[in-house]
Image (tube, rainbow, N blue to C red):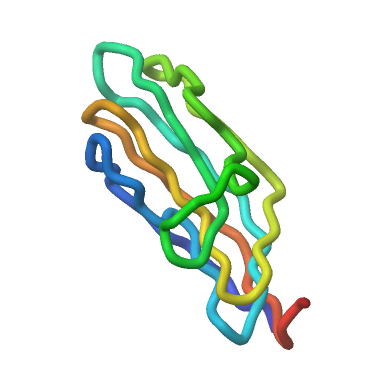
Length: 108
């Protein structure tokens, strides 16, 4: 039986937010869109981590320019149990939507 996953996140400017989170006992396979609904471009950074303290090796996007109306689409993305995908934008009016399927049992 599939285990669907959907998470919608309103992104606050200059704050890293977890936009997808694998539970401690399951992996997660998902797609993610990040959308800029505002009138001006913003810079986006994204990283994988468990507790919002990225190291140099954790970044997957860094100062990507997200223009209005053109979403950043990434798929497929796989998270191991307990891992999160964080996104930070430097402006308002952005959101992220992640959707996919939780694995069971856990993928390691």
